[in-house]
Image (cartoon, rainbow over all chains, first blue to last red):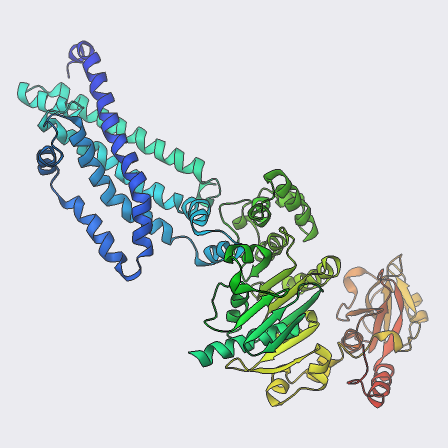
Length: 214
Length: 376
């Protein structure tokens, strides 16, 4: 380990860390916004539910490098545009979160739903005020997996030149220099742990009623 | 399909025939919510009929109207907001505190949040839960407490009509009796039209002004007051349903213990010596009372003791309060080790005792005057 190198490169490393942070968080937030209506549709689709959830899961099997390379052709963006990475990672997170949301909605007891309907909730209000809040613990659990796995997938984008902590790996390999690689790994783990904590905290704040929070 | 629907509507008709409702035909049912009464249906698939009233299930033909207004013409959400609904296991919202749960129906009816929460706190008190429960979540309550919150939630929008679907069946027998007693007290205070479904015949007889009994298949077997149901079951189905103990159950409706002649009972206080107890006693047993003349239990003079002590008392005898049905008095007589049933006033103070002979003479008297025809 070469501490002088770390001190000398601190500014660059900081920038890469922020990029990595942004590229990990933005796609998960985008996919969550999309996964709520899509998960609801899958949840409501009766016998077609396994089909839709299977289809969503299929996107996760696309090799990430292939997706990074192909997206510019589909989106007509430049190959170095970070938008490509954001879109690719949103697709991956979405593949996970659609199932998470559908499963979360199915944890809500039918008795509770029936009581809500009988009391005179309209369908949209029932979804927003009863079903979704009750699905928060399950969605939080899925979101933690999505966020952490996103942190690791982001580093692959170094291969197509998008700046983030993965750039430290390619740099280290090219220079046969271990310090950047170790620094990158440590910062990735720190970032994943911080984001995981943030999701847990948000889930806790959104479900004070959850008995496992006590 | 039509036959089934018609049957189900007949079910509704039967249920409502029991409340303040008229079944103008098997296809048309009218509910009036202007007077207070409870109707009770007994049947295994009867939940369906309740759900037809608030249109959780839509009848494909026929019509149900409330206060002259056909429900199928109403906005379904507005209809449901007008009707209180209580279900088994309460169906509380797990993510809302007790007061928030109760306030839900008021909020849905357009009441402002502070006002709804104030109403909720009042109702919490009314259903016998203290303010300390206000900010708890449903999982922190027992089954009986949840059920009370469920009733309070249905009341918060001040509906004229309430539907209760086996509201007390998921709690243990002791809590169930408490909830039933509170239901009767609450109903005296608030006076709603309540249509309740239960499979428990004793509950139906205890809570209903009118009880509708339905056969398997949804046809109406009988609509009657609990008293008539026991004294004059329409057919074997009803007779079987009200059961083997109907003679004993009928005592619940056969007048009060007031007609029974009471004998004054000698008593001892805690701390009395064995000689004092023997001097007072009429036989083997003597009744111990506290300083306010409230019965504590029976002292057995055949057992060796020096002073009357709380832990030496026989507690097997039940108490019957003045004004309670003969059923309670007979139970007190049968359960007392001395064979003398203890009767107290409303404050629990000893009035006297009754023997089996005195109860049975009142029963014989009543039979000769034909109870079935007499009004309670």
